[in-house]
Image (cartoon, rainbow, N blue to C red; front, side, top):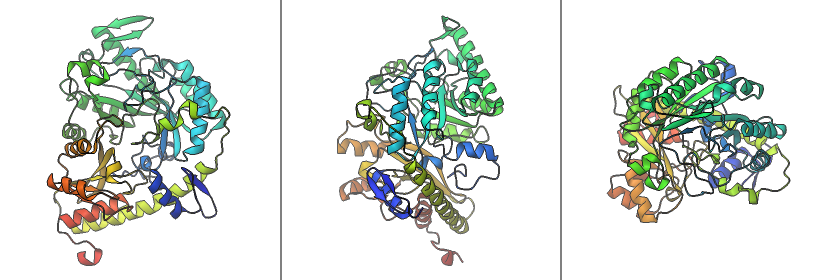
Length: 495
């Protein structure tokens, strides 16, 4: 993109190399889905829908940002894991927002964000209630946004109870991504998750409520997939209630054509005020979540990079810049300037090609060096995005976890180290939390780390490595794996 000038966070850059440095400072199976070349087993029309969507493509989430606007506060079901909070900036979980917006204000905010966040590719409405139940506001918001930003992808998130009433309208509005929450296919299990629903002008409780919700969710999934709309199914893993049952959910949603299945850990804390939190229902451990995900192999394709975003989240997955764009900071009059986003897309196209080539080379070297059946290894990575190791250890609120073995390097999950809350910890408290979060992992790759935390991590059996700062993740993870396993590190040594 020589000759183009791009600004990221106020930095003016004139080349892709310079833009890379700006991203590094500003925070912007490695699956083939989202790479610069279309996967062989993916239809071109599907590829166009997912290649720049951070939630539907693990690879794309390194480069592209999402934005949620909180325009749909009404909800038609009660979940034991949910407590919607308004005017709240301290919790990072679904149903929480700082401001509720009307469609006019939401559209103005989206344009303001698009002008300042060139990574923005997707606008979603995820409540804080249910977007399909509060449909009038959802529809009006999308209509106003696309008048000025016609290239943005549109998504909605819904529990499915009201979705069948609006499916055909989605096609008219060019909405081709829907997130559908399905926590059970057995209504008996549902009775432990949902106290009541509001349907057909009445409040319904117990098994009848769960049965109706199940039927409407299956109807929603069938109707959406029949129309070519990509569906990501969200399921909350609740130990002792639906954890084993989610294996059956995974099989069923695959059979019905879901594009992805996102199994998320229950967020349970009494401070959140949810029924489960107050009752002491625990969430799953990282090991329990991974075990369930591994058990689903062969079922619906799993999403493993979800961040369980707030209903007003802004930015790359894993970051939230929403507090930079509260309505008191948004100009009264905004007009869209496409130059930054266009230049950024051009940069990403080239960067993806380079990263893909580097990842393939690293995989080939590792496969050549590793004997079949060699032990797999998990590596934690501090990254702001772009597929690079570009974050200071002390600034990380989460770590991306990659697995490497004879088959190469692949993303498996992320682990939060801020307890789903912004701030509130001193440095010693946070380090203790990081060590607890990284249970079962003995290696961290980061751009930089101080001597004291590195020594404390080492005392806990975790090695922090900063020698691969700003390298591609796959290249660095492969190199570290070969070193730790005592394997040849270069093609010449292999030969």
